[in-house]
Length: 340
Image 1 (spheres, helix red, strand yellow):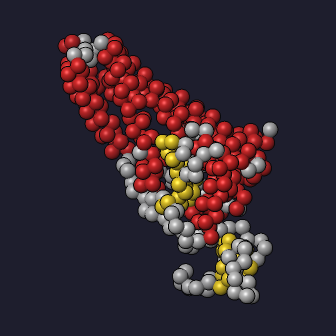
Image 2 (cartoon, rainbow, N blue to C red; image 1 turned 60 degrees about the vertical axis):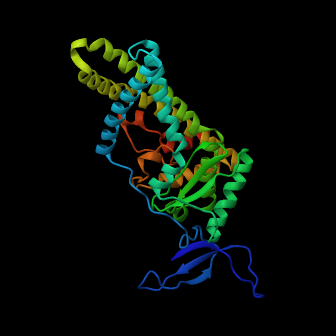
Image 3 (tube, rainbow, N blue to C red; image 1 turned 90 degrees about the vertical axis):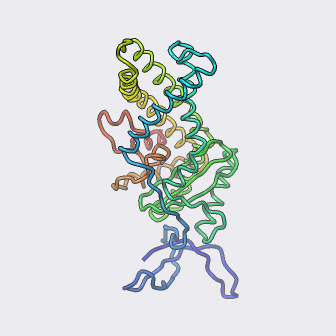
């Protein structure tokens, strides 16, 4: 049995306002036509006719290590070539600083510019363009209203196929963003809780969190690239050769990147509190608290791809030192902040 929001017909044949309906499926095939009866206790949305795509895996750990090494080789080769054209000494502080800033910010800005495409591809999120159900229409209308109240243009609204309740927002600009929710969120949360989650994501967009996080990442990338090469120039003698220099640079970037990740994670946790508060202003604090408590009841590990995991709403279950690298604060801390 499943409850969902649907239109019903009046005796004269016209459509009435939506009402909660419960579907009772006959035993046997799940594709059997359902019987429907109205009820006042339904809480879930109809997700039987929602359009979702198929996620594309972007690569595992080995692939990322390979990309890191390949990128560093390409970066060094490209910078050496460009420096030779402009007569810039790659070993000078000025040359290294320009190099570090160019590639430190360059990678972050490219990732930001492609964030919507990467998110859609990695999660299989399907953007709602022509609503095919009452649920899709409700999602569009709700996000449009929340965006208007937050003072931004309406983001694209998408649904992705995952049984885990979650949602995320991304995009390079406040007025050209994407808000996506999982099927699991729509199935397992009350309507007012889904609204609070949508408000949380709209608040992220209105706060410009994606851009700010990118700038912080760019600054830290610049320092990591610059400092790793300065240290490598000091440590590696002329006899060490370019191969030794390259290995030292890679090792130092990994070590310094480790600490830079903690700074990025700290800021990410701060922005979650701000987005929760923004949701409370767009809806109400009790409504957002209810949504977080609903997430608290979920004990299944999240499956949101790494590419967009930092933009999801669910909190990490990391403990100990691992909490320093968590992009989200514990749910109990977020709930306590809203209740104060």
